[in-house]
Length: 159
Image (cartoon, rainbow, N blue to C red; front, side, top):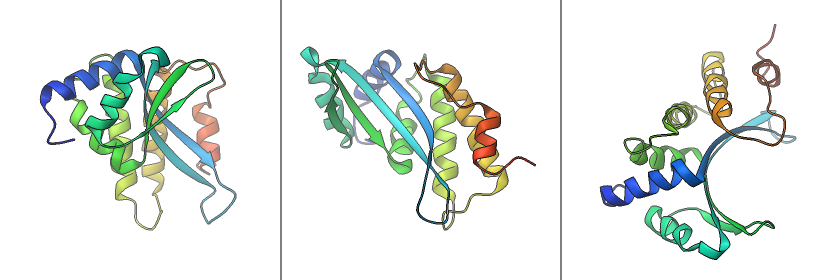
């Protein structure tokens, strides 16, 4: 996205501010050494009658996948530490209403990109939980959000 115009970046940031969400989740794992994995997501939403902007954004960013929900809403989802890091870095100067979430997601992506052999220090995990709480606080959700204590327990950070 670095080669895209500042106007495109500003438009995409505005779209994200209005019809998008920034998410950070911890998913439980049954396989592997780690009992959990972090998932970072940027998502853009649009009524399927007017889904063309989603295709334009996907083309501009050069990544993501578009799916159609049962409620006639299209979603453009972008997952992955490296992709989220790169996109948020470009959009951050133009994001207005989701600035705190964007900064927290960017910091989380930086921590996750620097991990070695999938190992995160206790400090890293605590910073990730902090970032997740910032993002969660600002997001609307219809289902139960995990509390800070639940997240710390899930990550084995409780005494």
